[in-house]
Image 1: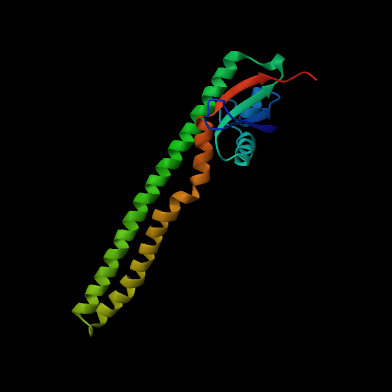
Image 2: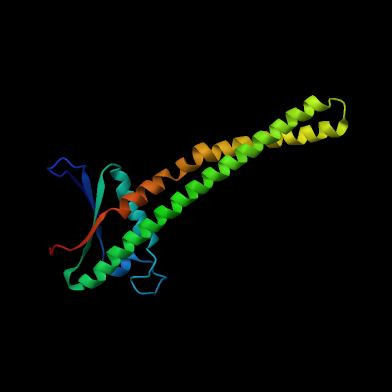
Length: 186
């Protein structure tokens, strides 16, 4: 498997080529999935290899070239596989983006509730400084509020960053130019 980099003469962004050698179409899909090509799950090994090669060149578009022996190629099957690959990567992008929105929403809610708990704790201090039950409630509310604020802020500021590399890879693959070519005869 190799990567090649080239730039279009019209000044568009660089595109690099990821070449993956396949013995058969089954190499793209999971060994444990016996469904038709249009429904099969992608192989973890295939995705891992594509991810590794895409990391080598983090900028620009990807051209995924799947090389196969000419005798084993079938255009109709290849069209189904290309569509399946794009669909898979688009679905993963949608899932990661939905998780990001969910993380942001959870972070906002946690932070807001934490601030409310700390405000309630401050109010208890101002209302009664001698009541034992107010002190107990304050001891419970204040650390809970801080915990919720910091947990929420972590989700808001760092939750989406954790998935950034995964999102970038899947976006590149969702928009990649995918084509099959016959292996050169040596």
